[in-house]
Image (tube, rainbow, N blue to C red):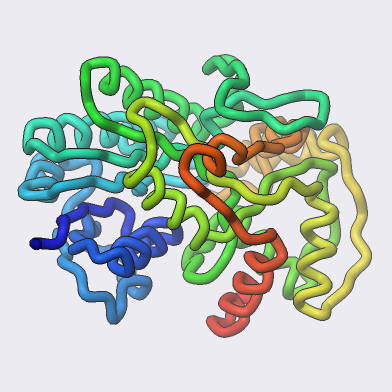
Amino acid sequence: MARPLTLVTGATGFVGSAVARCLLARGHAVRALVRPLSDRANLAGLALELVEGDLTDPQSLVRAVAGCDHVMHVAADYRIWVPDPEAMLHANVGGTRALMLAAREAGVGRIVYCSSVAALGLKYDGSSADETTPVSEASVVGIYKKSKYRAEQAVLSLVAEGMDIVVVNPAAPVGPRDIKPTPTGRMIADAARGRMPAYLPTGLNIVHVDDVAEGHLLALERGRAGERYILGSENMTLKTLLEMVDGVSGRRQRRLALSARVLWPLAIACERLARFGIEPMVTRDHLRMATKTMFFSHAKAARELGYAPRPALAAVVDAVAWFRAHGVA
């Protein structure tokens, strides 16, 4: 029997390359959508087909989905600050819808859309949010999160039209092959190098990137169309995470706990400098996000998909080892 052909968007990236590896291990033939100038180091040695294209080029998406049985849509512009918010919306929202429509026209079967917990609601009492926690665009902070919220809503509207799409919402993935790195990865790398002298009193959910990839495959195999599944692992405060990195790296350091209010003037100054092309160290959106405790429950994914992530410590160990091996930490 022929192997199913599955397209992976964002396959050169952190989560996408993990998904591609997971698909190959499961016996899929994999086609990877790659941008012409993308760094392909994460795909080195993998037996897959490369097709060049971009989320902002609809015709390239038509070529990419041709003949595919499934699509794993992982690609996204993932940055907390961007100089041109409209460009991010064009890629993350418009590109997602264009890909879904191209897949429908090509007769693709099941699609797994990689959204984010950024598109979900939050609890404000320190408890864990889940897929049913209320959310509105007005409550979503920052252009990246707004783009993921709008993209998820666009996907769910296509489900209502009959498309077979399952949505997964990864928390904060950590682990090997974080080549950019992601904002969470950069924080871990900096802490491992002894360059995190302060922190904000926030919280997040840490999950191994390979468990996120496994969650994508479980969603493809067992998920229900139109359902969302949080792919997380362990909730912890930022202070606890940094202490965990210290223990793994062997580089303990004293840190100052800061409040968002203290950093507000600095954020305004950084945003003004950004007008001259200087990427801001911190913005007001960064600080608004830091005031929210981003705890989530993956109980639904565990119950319906059989999702069983490893502890956060394993993710941090693998991340620090990879960053050190590549001269980042």
